[in-house]
Structure formats: C-alpha cells, structure tokens
Amino acid sequence: MKRKWICLLLAFFALAALVATHTFWLPFLAIWLDVSEPPRFADYAMVMGGGIENRPVVAAFLWKKRWVKEILISEIQPRESEGRALLPPEHELTRAMLIRLGVPEERIVTLRGNHAATFHEIESLRRLLSENPNCRVLIVTDALHTRRTAWSVRHLLGADARRISFVAAPSERYELRRWWQTGDGFFMVTSEYLKLLFYVLRYGRGVLWLGGAAAVGAALAALFWVFHCFAKGYPPSGEESPSATGA
Amino acid sequence: MNDRNSTQTPERAARFWRARVFGLLVALAACGLGIAFRSHWLPLLAYPLLPPGVGPGPDAVIIWIRSGDGHSFSPEEAIEEASKILRRNPQSHVIFTEGWPSRLVELGVIPPMVEVLRRALQEEGLSPDRVIKISPEGIGLWYEAQAIDRFLGTQHEARVVFFVEEFAGRSTATVLHAAMSPDAYRRISIVGIPRREFSCDNWWRSRAGVKGLMVGYLYLLYALIDPRPTPGLKPLPLAAFEELIPAAPTEIEQNAAP
Image 1 (cartoon, rainbow over the protein chains, first blue to last red):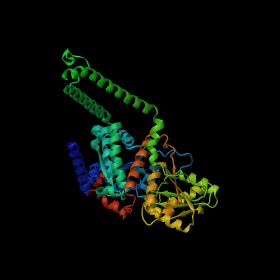
Image 2 (spheres, rainbow over the protein chains, first blue to last red):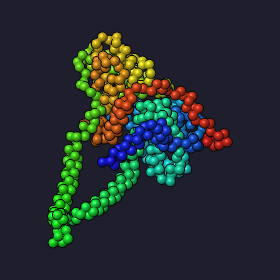
Image 3 (cartoon, helix red, strand yellow):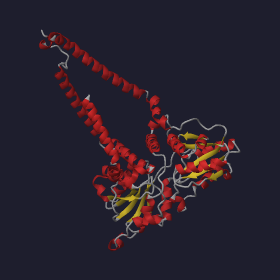
C-alpha cells in the first residue's frame, strides 16, 4: 500500500515537472519533424499537394532564383461532388498561381494520377526518377510535413532518395518553436505524429515490429506467469504429483 | 494443516486454469462480437464530435456560411442547404464570414469567396443581394463569432442556422459558446453536414473518414483547452517568401539557368 502511494506521488511529480518545463521540451517535438535543408541546385522543385497557399510561392521563388529548372505539381482529384464544382481542382489552381508568380507555363510539369496522399505523390515521383536517371528534385512542403515525406521517399526510392532534398515553406499560422499556442500549430504537430505512425504501420514494417514485440511480450508474460505459479505452489499443468497430494 | 493445503492444491490449480481459459474465451468472443457488430458501435466514437442540439427551426431566417481558409467553403455542401432555405423563406438571407485571406485571391487566381458564393446562388436562381459579408476584426472563428454577435444585436430575435462540417460541430460550438454572448449563442443552431464521402455512420469505411475523425478530435481537444485565438497572427507578404530563398551562387548559375 505504501509502495503504491510512493509510485503515485512520483508519477504526480513527474507530470508536474513535465508541465512546468513544457516550454523547453515541446519545441523539440516540432523540430524533430522538420528535416528541411537550405536549397541546392536541382532539376525540379516538386510542390506537394495540400498546401496551396504557401508551397507554390516557395517553388516559384526557387525557380526565379534559378535553383531549379522546372516545377512539378501533382494532379489532385477533386472531392466527390454531385453538382458542378465551385472552383477548379487544386493542381489547376497551383498551376495558375505559379503562372501569376511569373513561372512560364512550359516550365510546369504535372504528374498525372489520383494523388490522395503524400505516399501516392512519391510513388509518381519514383516513376519520374526512373525515366530521368540523373535528375535531382527539391521537394517543397511545410516544415512539419518534411519528416513524413522523407520517410516516404526513403521507403519508396531506396538509394535514389539521395537525389531528393527538402525545402520548407513557411506558415503564418504557427511558429515552429511555439506550435502549441495556436490551433493550427497544435493540429499540424499532433496530426503529423499520428500520420507518421499510420504510415509506419500501413506502408512500413510497423505491423511486423508490433507483432514481433507483442509475441515477445506475450512469451515473457507467459514465462513470468508460469514462474509465478510455481513459486506460489500451483503446478501449472494442474496434474497431481505424489508429493503435492501428500500420498 | 499442511496436509489439507496439499490436498487442496490440485483442485485450486485446475480451477485456476479453468478461470483463465474461460477468461481468454470471453475476451475472444468479445473481440469477435465487436468485429461482427462494428457498424453498431463505431458510430458512437463519432458522436462526441457532432454538434449539440437539433437542426434549424422553421423560424431560422439567417444562414451563416464561412470560409476558414479563403479558398474553400467549410463545408461546400452548405450552399445547397442554404439554397433550400432561401427558396423556402423569401425573408431569409446569408451572412458570410472569412477566416484567413487567401493568396489565391491576392494574386487574382480566384475571385473572393463571397463572389463565388453569390455566383453559386445566382446559378440556383437566387438573388446575389441576399448575401451579406461581415468582416471580423481578426483572423479565426473566434473573431468571426464576435462579429456575428454584434450583427445579431441589430437583428431583433432573428434565428441563425450555421452550417459546419459534421465532425467539426462540437468544436465549433465550443468556440462559439466562449466567444459569443449567451443571447446570441442561444439564437444559433449549429448544423453538421456530412460529407458525400463519409458520415458518422460509415466513417471507418474510408481513409477520408478515418482522417476526418482524427481531425475532428484534434480540433475539439484544442477548442476545449483554449478556444480563444492567438492574437497577432497575420498573413505573410510575398516579399517574406522572396527573402527566405537565397540567391543561387553566380558561378553555377549559368549551368542551372532555365
């Protein structure tokens, strides 16, 4: 009983310490997600879907400042709609935005397909890289999205992942080092961790690792249980032995 | 005493094993039943996200539609629902608010969303004059709710129906409750519109549905922790993006020139 109280007290103090020091450790949760680098020369800047406000702007300036020769955009299928769509699909808006920012139309390449997720966009990029063995690509996306994108790149491209680097598009909706202070920052960081977990389980070897860990855990628990039963004097088999029955 | 314990041990061991095997079977049966009847209990996971209360009463004359990001409606289906009310009730009108201003509008790629809304209603045979744009003092639902609160002060006892995405119902209600006066909040009916891809009755069947549930819970969690907005947020000017990208080194520039 006394040990239980000590454990509860320790847990309380640990929690209090975490809360008191949150401004020191919370920024690292966001910083870990950001694997972006300064720009380097490449053939293409690829604008990842889902960030139409900022990502195309960064890609346009990468082109204008001659870091890249062309810009890649991925086709995004519009949402299911019974009636007429109010606005064109995202890739068409991105293309129009790039043109408005001064990128010539012939410098914009569209990756065709139904890209509903980051993983699908990287699959299309893999096809492009296999057709152009020497090309290099800068992927433009939000800083917090770079870790998951990099994971997809490593998973799908293998050794070709060296041909890819990441440039972060800034966001006005949150600060990386104070992400928990705005709704969008909180949403971005927490959802990225959840999505990363989903990616590892769905596309990676997460299920295998999880299954292995569960099997080892179960085996250890079973061993512990059997040992515990013997120590308490219950033969786990339940069979009578001469000494146990006193015969 | 020792002999009695010894004779009881085999029985206790057998009972011990029987109890554990029975427990395991019960757990397996519970898992099987859970999987078999998932369509009965999985909707319960989405219920906490749904808006509180009932749908719009027949006396609702003001329809609130918003665009959180300046380039889409949240949700797009709100326009169809608004059209139905506008046709039914000639006295009713739409109030429109916007959260973040869109760079797409700034660059002239798309018209302002209020114009898109007016055009959509016009195509339905409804007058575009029935849309009133209300400008909030800051960025975010909190400021929009306060602007609506002030507007409702001039509309005596008018009832409002606010169309939101189904899984954003509870988080929206939480923000509105914190931002508005009790009288204004009482006059608003929040109506969650399910998406065509998923609803609370089938969200687990699609990737979009699972993502929608996750997003709904994250926003609800934040709305419960702190429904107030962060002051001082403002859009980045294009010049800030230009400053962010350094100039390419000149010696290699010629090789990389487009």
